[in-house]
Length: 78
Image (cartoon, rainbow, N blue to C red; front, side):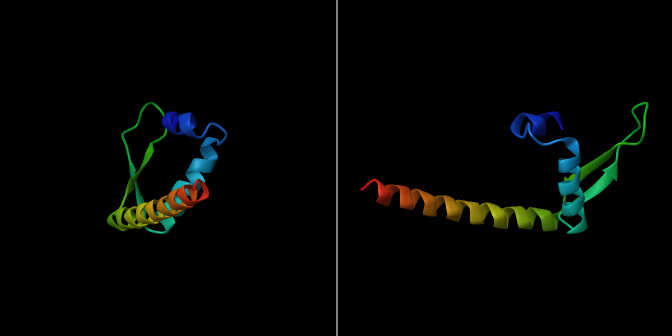
């Protein structure tokens, strides 16, 4: 959560957990419990094979969008 706060300082922890729960509900992530640390049992999230496939698809989409934007930039500068 500390690392996420570096990149998304305007979001609080509850926003991240909403996203994680949605990813779990869609089968892109799974939850497992860690060992106790003097308090409640910690929950950890990890990506599933379905989540890995989804991530690859989204990365390909992002690369395509990036190429299109770069192409527009080159044409605008001509």
